[in-house]
Image (cartoon, rainbow, N blue to C red; front, side, top):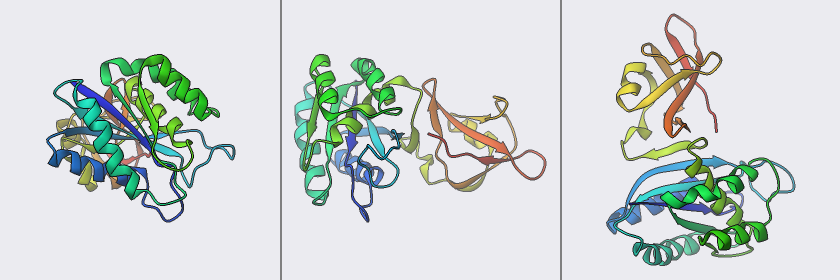
Length: 235
């Protein structure tokens, strides 16, 4: 079975951030025989009313578990890993939910991308849905991002892949469209919706496809030269 873990550390300046925290946690979980299938970065609402450091993103981790009985262990392990790593002034939080039940959190997830959601509202939704949501340190501001990450991951329509079990996250430079297809990634010209089957894509930085319709999609725009494309950074 699959379990979704949402984390948000509402970090402070000069702190590496939520994505790196999720990657470090994935390594420790693997050492304890819990496999991380995918990590997504989720963009939340950018507004002065929302406490964030730079980009206001949270992260979801799709975990492969043996049974629901692992959730109490995961709660203890993840909380014990995250809390000591987060510096004073940060507001880390976590959310755990069976992936099959997380669709009930989708509405709050989308709401958190468009407007202010209070920690009290996030906690109320978690109680209503029977979802584990807890603040780990500082104020309770991180619970919104943690719950929203799980809801957005469950939607299959939002998020940028920062890690995948397929191992393509380290790809950089220029890569063939055919190679991306072999990785299970659709390459789509954003302006037309055309799905490409050949050509070369400049990744600009690292390969970071998005999730749309539950699939991995890399959005591109026309680049210089014939059959040349440039990867676009989208949420």
